[in-house]
Length: 233
Figure 1: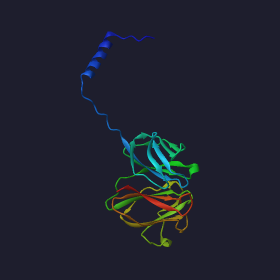
Figure 2: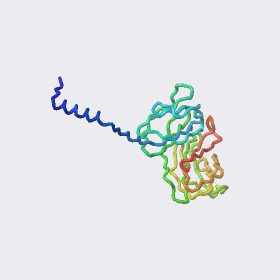
Figure 3: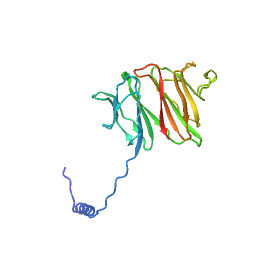
Figure 4: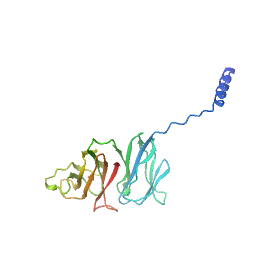
C-alpha cells in the first residue's frame, strides 16, 4: 500500500527540520544511573579467572580468594561472565538486575564443578553513632552447617551463646549492628564448640561496615579461614 504524503505534512516536516538546523544549542545526555559491584573469587578449586560485564573485561587474572574494590556499572540487567584466565571457557554466565544506587557483592561460589554467581545486596547505610555493622557469610563448601560466635577476644566458648546457629553453606546473615570495639569471631561445626575458623582480634571502629566470608583452604577442605571485606570506611 502506498503511503499518501499531503502538502501540509511536508510543510510541517520542513518546519521541524528548519528549527533543528537553526538551533546551535545541544542538550547533554542525562547521566546513566549506576550501581556498584565488587567481586570475590570464592571457588576453592577453580583457577584464576577474568570477569566480564556486558562482554567487557573489568577484572583480569583474579585468583582464589581475591576480591575487588567496588566497580561502578550501569544499573539494569547486566550480563556477568567469569571465564578461565588465558582461555575461552566461561564458567559463570548470569544476568542479574542491578538497581541504581545499590551496592552488591558477587561471589564466585562453590566448587568448580558446580560454581555459580552468588549475588548479595550490601547495606552500606551508616550504623548509629558509636556502632559498627558486620555481616557473616558462609562460603566454605566443605564445612557443613556451622554455629557462629561473636565475643570479646579470648572469651570462653564453653559459656558463650552463638549469635547464629546451624548456618548452612551459601547463607548470609543480615548485618549485625554492634558497638564499636574489639571482637573475636569464631565459627564451629553446628552443635559443637570446636573452632574451625578464628578471626583473632578484630577491631571495628565507629561507622565501619564489614563483611566476613568463611572460606575453604585452596583446593578445598580444611584448614578453613575467613576474609574480611571493607564495605564502608
